[in-house]
Amino acid sequence: MTDEYIETARRVIETETQGLEALAAELGNGLGAGFRQAVDRILAVTGRVVVSGMGKSGHVGRKIAATLASTGTPAQFVHPAEASHGDLGMVTQADLALVLSNSGETPELADLIAHTRRFQIPLIGVASRAGSTLLRQADVALVLPAAPEACGNGIVPTTSTTMTLALGDALAIALMEHRRFTPEHFRTFHPGGKLGARLAKVGDLMHRDMPLVAEGAPMSEALLVISQKGYGVTGVTDGQGRLVGIITDGDLRRHMQGLLERDAAEVMTRGPRVIEPDALAEAALAEMQSRKITCLFAVRDGLPCGILHIHDCLRAGMV
Image (cartoon, rainbow, N blue to C red; front, side, top):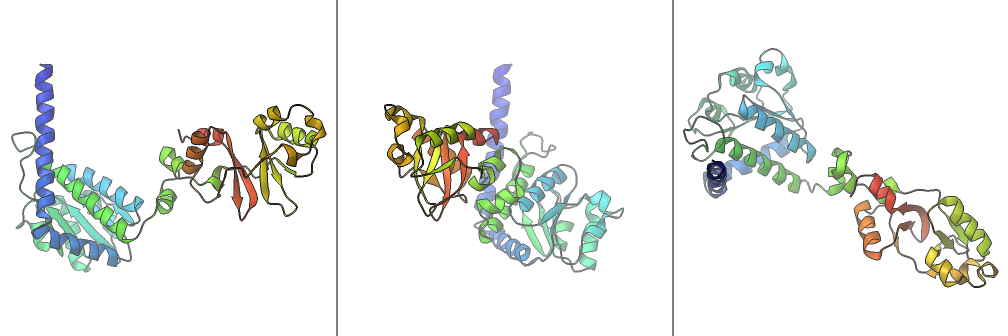
């Protein structure tokens, strides 16, 4: 029985893969022109992309709306049944409607489609039937290629929803690349979780109360600063406040004999590894791990402006 389960899973995945391959191939034919029109229409919108669909298409639509919104294209999902009971007010003439329906004949979409036609709201339709009501009314018709559903009897939306989802992702990424959407933009919409942590900047995590001593400071003072600040290191600055060195536990061990008779400049390691405060914290973490060090000073124009400990990265959930 277990082998039968695996065979079913493999058949489903292979069937849906064939649907995606057909979708990709169709972009080189009639679907490609519609896709380009859809991207241009969305780029011209001053409001939001309002995504709608019923049933499984609605679930896919919610994901597409979320992907658009998180990649620089303002979007929201409006349930077609709720739209008929007041939520049509969410769809304005500054918006564009992206409506999903495998058959293109979903009754619950009628009021939403009529609303877009009444107020000249651009309508992009996605369906499997070119002659369906949705695609005949749409300003841009995106016709999914004919492909069997993975259930075998054609009644469970599987391949069709996978193709719709992939087409929505393709729209979102095409728009994102055109807008030159950067990791910094992405971080703005994803401040939480592991993804947000990986996109955090050094300046977001660093401490501004830094362990610093002057080059001429006696080692008794340097030891006191190392102990008080708790980072296990102290930076060393010159007369202009520039970071010129760092004193670590390794430096202390190497100069143990006569340590208290020396000054910071004699003990420090010159030219320490540093990082810009605008750099991604992920880059700082990689630097610390590769160099087997626990701290990095953040420096701008030679002047120290913060210190980042590897534990700060761990607390932020980067590992």
